[in-house]
Image (cartoon, rainbow, N blue to C red; front, side, top):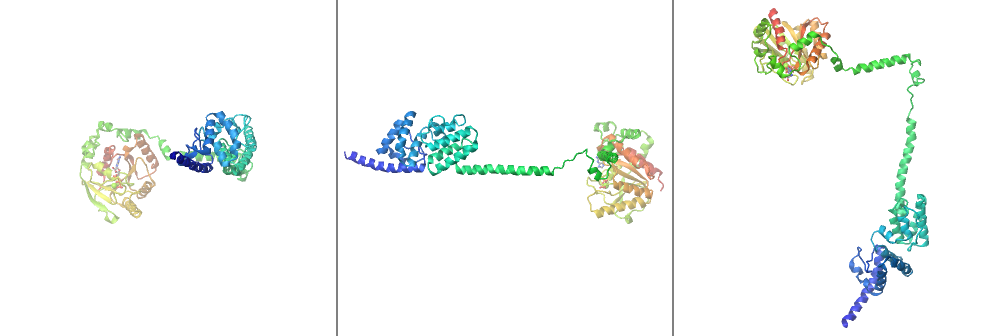
Length: 536
Ligand SMILES: Nc1nc2c(ncn2[C@@H]2O[C@H](COP(=O)(O)OP(=O)(O)OP(=O)(O)O)[C@@H](O)[C@H]2O)c(=O)[nH]1
Ligand SMILES: [Mg+2]
């Protein structure tokens, strides 16, 4: 049997090896190593090679006992009690491994371990700790008497809700464990996860907890510090108390001045609330203006209504397409003058460049982009002769157009906002002012006002100038098609009322739309009368 002898020798060697490694392993694993039912290491994370030899030698015998006893819970407990003395002789690490064996038998988690230990103080404490009678049943096998007392105290403290007491006791116990039993510290760690009072067991976690608790305390303290400061800042003002503040302001206590001031405040509050727009809405147009607006289809209208009335809003439409006047005489005048071709013959940037005043002139003035050039085109229906643009400031010179042999139409540069340098715009204004105030042969200035925006300060400036120079001028509201008919009437009423005292103003106020053609016929009639009666 040489093979048997050699086998035994091999086994002995392995046993020796295992004996040493098992201790080391338990020490290093610190209770994390688990036993299987057959007592063999391990399902843990340790490499298998380390623990294979556990089946042999004395260790194997002991494991055999363990195995038998592990098969039932009761036996295990009996074995543990009996074996504790025996195992207790071993080093702490080994003893821990024994306990761990029982602990991890049914699971590897510490929480489970506590449950597996079953009727121990420990489990009762932490499992039932949330209920009642912590530590009243059973005895913890692995704990010393001192530890049991601590746990009981912890449980009692917890049960009674005395967290502070529990903290103190727990912390003391943790100190003991740190110095001695690794198992104890592990148990305490598991305890940490079960409640606030348990968290204090580990000194490090206790320190963390302490700092955590401190921070909010500090915040609270700061908040508490802040509150009174805020309160101090608050000045309680009684709105009905007129004793101090109002006396200091020099207002009598009787409240007479006070009431007056209140009334003034109310009035001043009301006035700004009445915006310009609201004031405009409050205007009541006269019936004559309203009828004129309706008759000429001024204001925003449906296309179908314009067509029914005989308007042709097609820009390329000839002059004839404008609705016929009921008066044959007026119709004749319109045709005779405005059927003539519109001829551009002069442009002037300075007054010295003005052409000689051979013909009576009708000028079109107004702010930039108000529609002066467009109106010239609409009156003659010769689109493109006068250049227009949606960009303010296109017309930068005084442009002279002959219309037949009887009248000259003058397109003036606009004033106000324009895409041009300030100096240039100022020169335009000066040129326009010079023209309207000094031009010989100027029979009428059509001052164009945008119906939507009304008159602006620059318009008033020019009016004042024409009033001073006694230049005849007539207001023409443009772009009436962009506002409601009632607003066209309101604007007309507003402007007429504002210029009632002006002597050089020629009535009536005209309203047109170069886009729809509304009011163009009426304006033609007015302008034709100028040329007819104009003295050369
Ligand atoms: N809806 C509408 N738009 C108009 C009317 N008249 C002119 N416009 C537009 O207004 C813009 C300015 O027109 P212009 O005739 O160039 O105005 P302007 O007063 O000559 O402008 P400046 O030469 O810069 O002073 C253009 O885009 C026109 O199409 C109108 O009656 N209705
Ligand atoms: Mg123009």
